[in-house]
Amino acid sequence: VLKNQVAHVRAERNILANAGQGNPWLVELHYSFQDEHNLYLLMEFLPGGDLMALLMKEDTFTEEATRFYAAETVLAVETVHAMGYIHRDLK
Image (cartoon, rainbow, N blue to C red; front, side, top):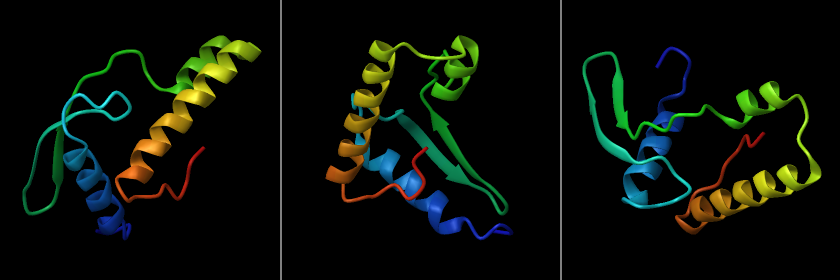
């Protein structure tokens, strides 16, 4: 609320809630609840970190790895677009 992010957080929660189980591109949301100050999202645990952590570990990706991760990113964005959402800050 203080950082004016309520709409963004709500949209993220709605995307995860509407994605359903078994979507290979979005983390599964098991449950969400809130108290007076916080929204809590109980999500699937996916070990391994994010793409930035992997890039920092590897230093650089091969061309083959770059194509692989770029293709996976496109498929994930396509899934979100098909649900009627857009991503405003893809990095």
